[in-house]
Structures are given as structure tokens and as C-alpha cells.
Image: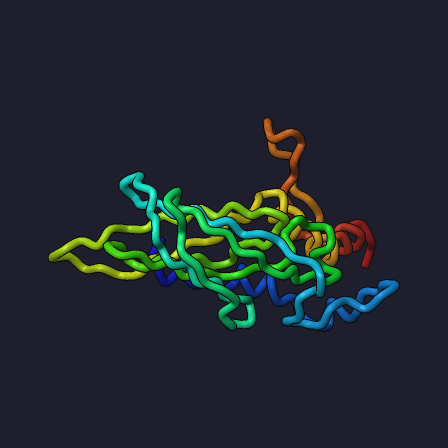
Length: 202
């Protein structure tokens, strides 16, 4: 996958996970109003632990990590320790649409280190304890060196729940169960209303 396609995919996913249209959050009824867009929840926070290594299986100590909130503002920065690790406490961003998920918002990160090309990690999930691996590419003399990008370590169950929420909201129907996948049935393009109308006479 080209860098452009990876960046485009990351932008789409970040938009989906971190910026659901306001009309949807306002339309749902709840005992108490949800936090406004781009607003963290006071007193609630998660931990994002970055583990930085190289493509040659070396631990990278002294790498600088810049944590960027979903609104584009720098939140914090720090250096990895001798084990290549650094953690940041990040405020939760909770609205009604993501209450069922362990992911409570996302951040982006830029990682730089001496001797390595820059690495951007998009859509890093904020959970009680996110572990986010980062792989740096060594600088190659007499070659073209560019920053690289990757997606955050989003759990597959969260992705399934994310799709399920909007599939149910749109009234989609499921495809046939996948053999050998414990009865899981992916969502399909057909609407439940289509099935109702197919059996009716004009």
C-alpha cells in the first residue's frame, strides 16, 4: 500500500472514530448531555504506552514522542527509556456513540530518533492501558529517506462494534455466517426495509 493510500485510510478512520457528526450525538436521548465535540471528560483518562524499536529488532532509547490530540493540538511529549518505552496519561473523549467501546477517543503521534527516519502513527486508541508498538526505519545513506506512517493498535473487537453500531443504525442486514469463524456474519449492503418490500405486490 502506498504512503498516500495509508495516510488517506488513516484520515478516514480517524474521522470516523474521533469525529462522529454532531447531529448523531445530539439526536440520541440520554439522562445527561454528552460532552461537546473536541472536549475531554474531566477526571477521566487513559494511558498510552509507546514501545519503540527498529526494523532491525533493536530497542530504541531516547526516541522523542509527540502526542497530538484529535483537534490537532500537541498534548505532551517525552523520551523513551532504556527499554524503548514511554507512557502518557491522556484524557478520555467520551460521547454517547463510543460508550460501549473500550476506546475512548484517539490521538496521533510523531516519533523521531537519532539515526532513524521519522514515523507517524495515526489513530492511536485511548484506553485504560493502550500498548502502541512503533517501528522506526534506520536512515539509509545514498538512498531516499522519508517519514513513514502506520495506523494505531485498534482492537478488532472495537472495529467490529464500531461497524455494528452504524450497521444497526442504518438498518443493514447481515451476510451468511462465515464457516469456521464461530458463527460471525459480516454486515452486507442490503437494508432490512428492502427485504420487507421485496415480498410485497406492486
